[in-house]
Length: 77
Image (cartoon, rainbow, N blue to C red):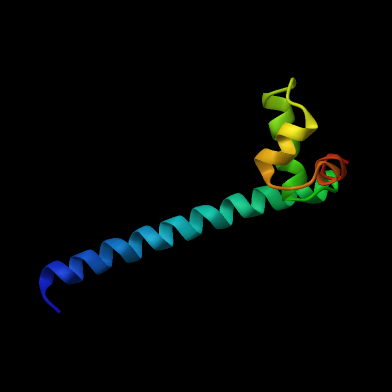
């Protein structure tokens, strides 16, 4: 393998590990919130969407999240 390809592989490996490490940290934090409040990631996402746009309606949220209106209602509890 030539030097440039080795450097490219090293950069890709470093970026991949950094991304995975960051994602694992996010996953831990969300997991703690999920445990504390008794809701999953989708519920946290729905609550965040409501918090950032209190005027949104259930139909719009269902369409945006590619789920049924019932799933939006259920996720918020």
